[in-house]
Image (cartoon, rainbow, N blue to C red; front, top):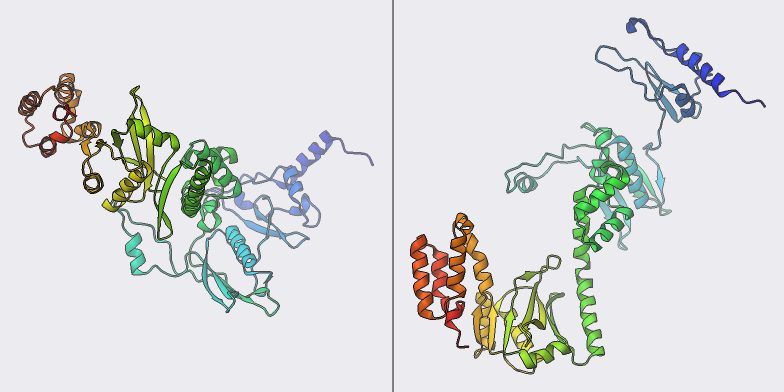
Length: 484
């Protein structure tokens, strides 16, 4: 069979278009479009409409009235809408009918979700009834806007710390389906109501419906790979958005991805703790001098301390003075990291041991210091540098009564900008003066005179924080413990 010349085919199609699309001077004179001029017997395919070049043709305007006509194709499933021109046919893929049968209740839920997506509304799960074995006897799936919020729910969501009110999401929509288990173990739609009492979302917002959003496997994999490279969730979502060609194709919002990762971290906390303890056991088997102890409370890892062989040897030689700091906090497991460090004969920092603590109560610090002494053969340090904390101070007095402690000057001086006028810190003379008085005073008398002169010069007599630091000056000013 001979093939038509492409140029001749284009010419014929152009003539067909001219026969179908008429451009009258007054559009009101045109009652309808005669479809028979361009296609045989009301049968139309997507390919033919594309060939005619009339896909998504739109003659709607405020000044031009629109006339709609529907044409049913031979397959009885494809509908062509005519707004004075042809449009791409749409398939009726999801038809909701009473008596529809499903293999299980999850299949019924999935179908209703797909149906809701095609209509453009969101779904939530309603009531259900289980038998003695936990098998679903019946279950209801509802429009997400079914019912009304209670006064308690309105009070919880109606206001926030920023004074904003949340948008009302319930309007008593009656739409639902009711699926019931059959004697054969399948599930049938026994009752339904299709009518809604609210408007549906626009097609451009359909991807934002809550029941249609979820983090797919691609999003999860990208998220975990990004976190391995220290890339945050926001940047991971941006990467997904670029790769998918737009945020509407990602399948979830940035907040959904953040919530998923937070839930995932919460689920694996216990598993991570168990893995951590198993690693400590393994290290102890490989090195019998590796020391660790831990406590579990309410099924959660509450306290743990460890010190390896090198750390314990270092403490024997350089353990007279150590620094203890618990200002480090793990952002993932909400536990305090408490390292014990010191200085060797090369004036370099060395590690003596470390701990994770779930809280900063006196009991936790008492347990930690007692555990540290057991790990170090009962040898107590002569001198401890710590930051200002009442619980640590009390625990040291209980466990290490003969150990001298001093406050960390770095932590105290770090708070100074928060306690005085910020403009003073821009003055080079002011910064040089305070550093000289604190760090460079050789004797107690020298520091006292300099401090009083500094307070008077800048009128800090009523600064409560500076007054408090002066009252505890013996625990952080070097001039008071140069004899140690």
